[in-house]
Length: 261
Image (cartoon, rainbow, N blue to C red; front, side, top):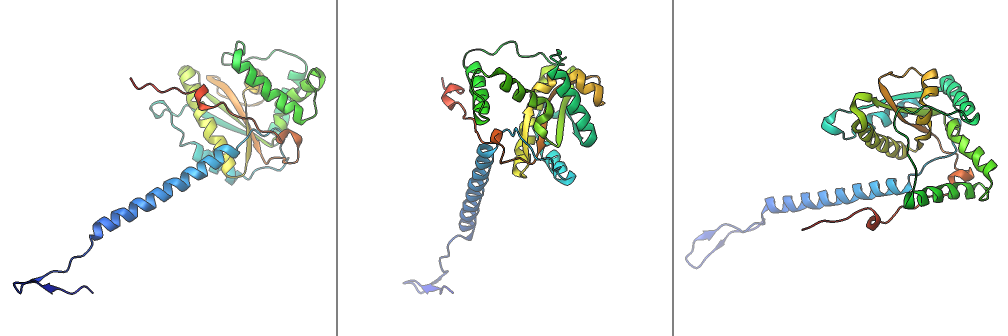
């Protein structure tokens, strides 16, 4: 314990103590900084390790795990917090029937019906990135460029949902237009990242939205909703070659700019 000291006049002065308040604040700041750094490191690791799964195991994901994904993804931001997304989880025999119908319709060459405007045409760097993704996938499967039969067969796997035991159908009310679609995109990203954090693999499938008519024939969806996409999910078949490649991302200099004046 610090002792009081007398000055030259004989008066006793109180001992000088370090400010407990400043020490406490510094300690809290240090803990907060360490927590922020740890959270950021975890987030970066999850984002960088997540990938689109193109081959799944048949084993189902427990409903408790699916509910964790849904509860967390529900925290996604949206315009005025309207939360426009609706999610229909399809599994079991219902998914088997949908899978068979989707694959059969696509394989027949029949033109599907989309609720939202399809992409007009890929061009420039967007076409280059698309082709690079396709060639990386086909290369992992030993499919050579120009082998349209084999590449076409692999493309049809989209409509089998790559063998996933579940698919989440994402819809949004038509009256919300593209704003609802945009907000649903944020939900989709958070759904997939949350699933990855729980060890569940995913792939977002815009292709199935081009056959919204087939989906509606088998699944009771609201007539006044857009079918935006599906998220196939389940346990990854890590030994499958289709899951062996990873796609790079463009540098931020290609997509971001800073305006200061």
